[in-house]
Image 1 (cartoon, rainbow, N blue to C red):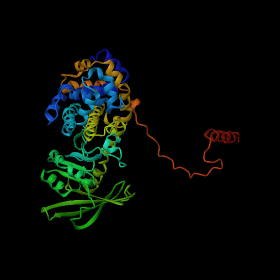
Image 2: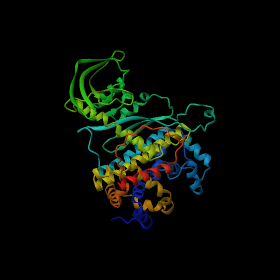
Image 3: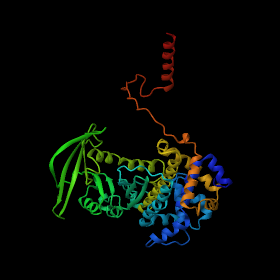
Image 4: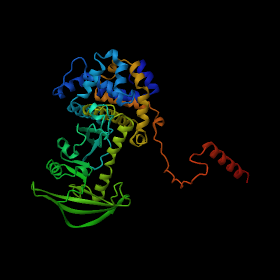
Amino acid sequence: MFQLGEKIEAFAHKAPAAVLVRAVLQRDLDPQRMNQLFHDAAELQYENKLLFSTVMMLMIDVSLKSVPSLNRAYLLHQEEIPVSVKALYDKVNGLEIGISRELVADSFRNLAPVVDQLKAKHAPFLEGFRTLILDGNHFAATQRRLKELRNKTAGPLPGKALVLFDQEYGMVRDVIPCEDGHTQERALLGPILEHIRLKDCLIGDRNFCVIAFFAEIAARDGSFVVRHHGQLKCWQGIGERKFVGATETGDVYEQRIVIKQEKTGTILKLRRVTVVLKQKTRDGDQEIHILTNLKWREATAVKVSELYRKRWRIEGMFQDLTQSLQCEIDTLAYPRAAVFAFCLAVKAYNAVALVRAALRSEWGESVVEELSWYHLCSETSSVWAGMEIAVEPADWSRLIDGLSPSSYGQLLRELAGRMNLSKYKKSRRKPKAKSPPRRGSSDGPHVSTAQVLAERNVKKSKFMKR
């Protein structure tokens, strides 16, 4: 059993989830390693009085919603910061996006081995393959704080990013950020190919239906499951499509096709899986078509359709980032600051993913699936500021620094075992009842709720007397 120390022990007794998150961030946000990351990734920027690790700790307070803004975080710690608030904002607004991207990659490299040590990886979607899910995230419009934006009616977009999600670890492997909010997602695909290897299966939406991208994945002995974009028309069917089965969403058909691009001489032989849906999509589509180079012995057409449907897991990740963490701060109008905030929130997401892995290792996956990410992050946010005041950084260092992956995993399991999981259980709502048609009222545009309830009680009492 680990000796946490008196102050950490007090928080671990009342809010073990927050201590567990802080223990993960202590390892992932080690100041010395973060400052070295800045030096290795920076091309033009340099450190003077303000260390990169200090900027990160201020921004992580914002990402975890323990403070509402970077300015507030600065005011709370201004005695410890040797520069003005303007210098702080200048640093954040000019941070090179390569540094922000490296934050996420560093997080995965640092935390994934601990998941291995805990033996808490998710079962693969496709046996024998590493599943990677690719999706894009358009940053929400910011406030018009820049002088050049104040007379604009359109919402100012601070950028976008491609996110590569590793299904088995439940973590983000890489983020490809871009400062231009109008850039096509297809233009950012190049760096994604660096991750593709033998027995990889990449799942993506129709925005990534690009012939050159498919050819590069195949050249690396990788596989893909990507929705067919209507603009890709240079294909021909080989034989008729055949009915092969059904899922809960619709009937599944399969057809062999060949794609020929005369301009580049690219020829691809693929399978085209069609799902005739029981209910139309939000866009009004009755059918969806999925392209894959997986062989039939690797995945049947029904399995391919199920793989594509599981792509929505990354949409859940984006929802978690938006609701539980502050990944898009509308007061940060400069694109590089917005990218930094997003990548730091993704880094925090990976940290909480390790927390969930520790919980799976201690309690089992079926139990953890019933836990609410929102409740866990809410507890962390509520006690974070007080914990940072009460517990000195040196106390966390003495507890965490220097632990082997094995010992560190044991510490996380011990903290996870202290949690009363009923406090974090999801609220399962019944399907919402269909609202009856509204009737007009003779009482005018408003009605007194108190009078309506009084009438209900009168009717109820008459019924009970019968």
